[in-house]
Length: 238
Length: 307
Image 1 (cartoon, rainbow over the protein chains, first blue to last red):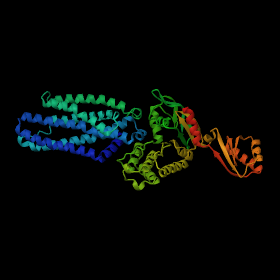
Image 2: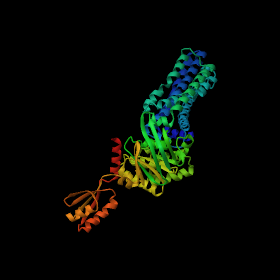
Image 3: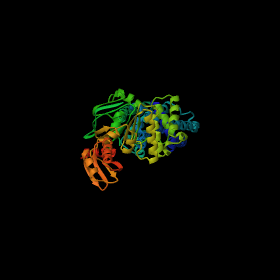
Image 4: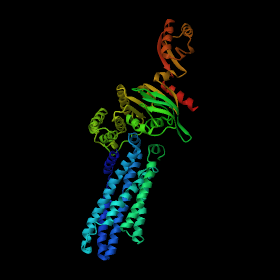
């Protein structure tokens, strides 16, 4: 049943031009801009600072992964509130958990696909542009691997759970988007800490970040699960 | 199909539905009348297991509400047309139906068949690939009804199905309800359109937080005190007046050649009065029943509660 809900979400997302432009355009632009930036930096930096720069730029895709699904999730839930389509949906023989899971998958898959798509373009372009300077292909390697395949999906889940929680408190899609868009703050803080040298983006640090985000995901999941139930939606949601 | 006993729902200090006891039989169209805020939608939501009850009992199709295990079974046997159509504007008419068919566990072939059946029946087949967002209100309402019927539910619950529709669209929806009635579909019709209730419902309940009355439209009309019959005669004389008095009519008032009397059961009393007038040599031009409509019954009950 969650897959049925998710498939419908995919269809709606595909037809929302503004979301599609955002989903496809933003990762692609970032990929192109960052790889050109890297080419310039690597040519003028030492090997160690060049690889640090690459790890940092890869982490920006984590921020992207946290922010992208919030728009989809916000539309998926607040949009249904606005269109008044939640009540007939809630009257079907689906459980609250199935609906929530369906909506989570519906926001997660396109957001993570866009993030990974953008990062693939970034990695391919970066390898192509930096091979002559570095004399080896930086991508793929463990650090971007963990960043993109572990931290980014966990960040995306976090963005979705936050969007679900906020959806119960706002009555329009724009408001939900604006609030959920603030998801970049915690990850940007980590990024700045990396830029300032307070933390290094090595495997151990990334695993710690993953654990912290994973725990936050669990807490937020239970919160969103408590908020996303029929009784709450029909009697307490704005 | 539906049985409630003392069903109650409170929101904090506010009682939305109080001690509601009613029974809806299989195959009947049951009207649920009441002013705004009377608790009609809250009742529907409780019956659909969308919100919990705070007191009493209710069962739908033999399943007790309030039991989480029964909630899915109850929702499976109900088709709900909410007061807001709640369609997906960015999906086509066909996709809207197909999505709900899938949520109700219908197979591909069942969905294809029922999507086509209902879209054709409601005159929307040619528009099946048009986004629901561009439909008129009437078309949206029809599509919402089709969506509620897509899984062939045993019970159709409709919350204000003709609200905000123009007369033509209202008639189309009402005709469709009458078609469903012929098929012996059980329909729980929540409305504050008295005319609509009178035209389509077998029985009607009037709710204003508490159940005020329940019965057939005729029974509710008869329950109203102070109904009057007006008779226009060719000429009124003392012989006619005396013959009516001998019949025991109440509050006989003469206004020229027009006589007005209080009646309890016009269907039984009016022919007797006409016979008495005719026997006394009078000629009856017209007979009409005054102030004895469902609207009077409704307003009387609702105002009594308010006072």
